Amino acid sequence: MSTPAPRFRPLPILLSVCAIAAFVLLTNSGFTQRIALLVEQGRLGTIVGYVGVWGLSALALLAVAFQPSLLIRSIWAALIALTAAVGFAFHMASGNEFTVFDVISLWNARHEAGRAADFYQRDIYWFALALLGGFLVLMLTPRIPALARRRWRGALALMPLVPILAMAAIIVVKEGGGSEGLPVQFQPLAVAGVAGGALAANPLPDRKDVAWEPIGPKVKKIVYLVDESVRGDYIDWTPDNPYTPELARLKPQIVDFGHAASGGNCSHYSNSILRFGPARSEIGRDMLSLPTIWQYAKKAGYRTVYIDGQAAFNRNPGKMQNFMTTEEAKSIDSFRPLPEDVTAPDLDDRLLDIIDTELKGDGPVFIYANKNGAHFPYDNAYPTDKAKFHPTMSETEGDTSEGRINSFRNAVSWTVDRIFKRLFAENDLKDTVIIYTSDHGQQFNPGHLSHCTVEDPDPREGLVPLFAITPDAALKQRFTEGAEASVGHATHFAIAPTLYELMGYRPVDIATRYKESMFSPDREQPAFTTGDIFGLFGNDTRWHPLDLTKNYLESGK
Image (cartoon, rainbow, N blue to C red; front, side, top):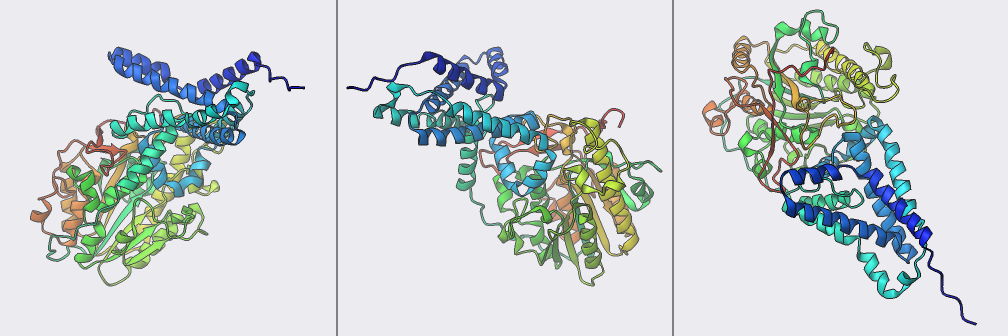
């Protein structure tokens, strides 16, 4: 007696297709807007290609859902669900598409995963929901007898590679772009593949030696104090203000350059610019072969010290942050990462303890110190009982601008205002110059990244403080004249040439590479970069002009 052939049941298949369509619709956004934009621009050829990629993606999803092999279906379902969850959660957290430069940024900031998870905790729920829902939708599908034949199995198994490869090709041709509005079921995987290939294909070149000869340092001790996520307009110099009153009292001893434009809007990119010291024209592949700030300091006779105030959150021993390599670290005489047992509110105090000790030494010393500052989650940066501004993020229901701003104010009060009070009270700054800035700024609009936005960033992400401290009357006068002559033009790109002159390098040599300096008038248009600054996908750097004369402070804050 023969076994009856399995019956074809259209209703369960239709329900599965509807569930897959719902999965796609709920996790994607921007399709209609992208089509409207392309129509408006008259790019009909691009529309055909764009719709074609979406069509390939839809076919690939159906191929996975109705794959007769349970093992193959499980593998692809898990991968697609994970990819969709990543893209969906990233969009929920940032309001932006997932790009190659986001992958590179996230990879190089992977040691911050724990703190990012705390800050974006609500978006992790969306990630989990998309992951579970996507997997179930692709797995709980009925069997189609005709597809069980061997010749269909191989074709269906390879089908998901087609949209992935198509998207990857578009991204490569567009030098890292072109992935906007594509389905998150495949786009993040294509983006990650291209990013990984770019990093593997562009190994770091050897760095050059310092070509200039120093003639003798102008100052014995230099502290390059780089804060984390501190926005320039959240330092208030008004006497007796409630936000940063200690800094206001210390104002006569500080030369304030006003609001400044950062080099980048992401920690690792900005810190790379600050340590490698490129001129604006050297952003790109040239930056990878420039001598580092450590090499200049060593050649000028300084003992070099690096203090990593955020190392407590880097859970991978031996891993360095912000694109630092072992080759770069060879020029650092004393590498001082803070241990894991230091609590977040105490990090900058421990960092200051090390600075205090180094400044009490006799020999020339150059210190580059990465503070923990106002790193997210802001509420972790200060003791709960020291909160001055309410409600904080921890006290509000839901993520609000008010909660973010109050928490940020508390973080700045504890880690910046209070720390500078300690710095001045505990140190004789004779023969010392301190250059202070932050790596990048912040924006406080929920639904968007606080920083590290690659495309169309909020200008506040590049808004940082910049000031100099020295008791040397002649140097202070030079800083004051430079600040007054450069109002509205302060920038990270003026710091490196200033440090080189302080170390004893000739201004005539420095001028062969740099237009800016904190000692001279600067009329360059302030701007900050986003995304790739190493020329991994081409020579076009994303520059974003910043009007430093504009008031960016949130209304009523």
